[in-house]
Length: 211
Image (tube, rainbow, N blue to C red; front, side, top):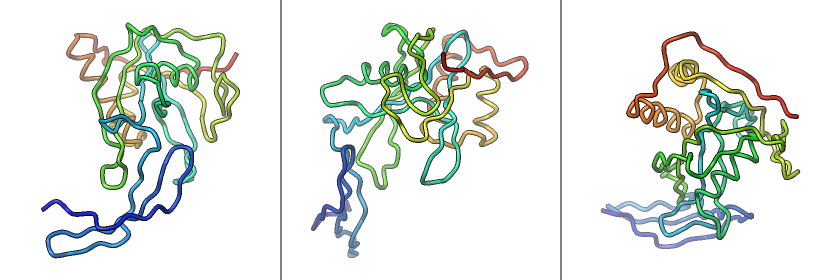
């Protein structure tokens, strides 16, 4: 039986999220205060944000971000919200440049499907992209911000990894972020399908430094 919501209370809101406590009834049981996060802006399919794995010169860009809730650093692909009136494609290209200093042509942006960050608590869906053949821009992303000058707390430096290193980091739990793992595995599947896998060889990485 699908639970029935009998009450909803707004606990908190900011520019991105509304936090609710829902009372639910179903299968002879009741739950009071079920926590639900609802985005302020989303489309009819609950698409709220994008996640992008950028590729340049055969290597893939990850950010080493500091995440306040877990109080540690996390290897992650580019992620961000879709602004009101913005398409997911435009959001993906914008976030890629803001966070990594890489520019991708729209024709080189490959859709990799959707994902739900946490269906148990978040009424949100994200879209995944692979950004191929990116080029650095003169407006390189800063270690703790983006080219627009708006500081994003915890945003880390960009490092480029080869396919083998990326796969090893995912398999050994050096990468733990869920969206990043999904993006990596879907990217590797896409590359294999298009006969562009180059896994044999040594592991490698290269840090991108700001101009």
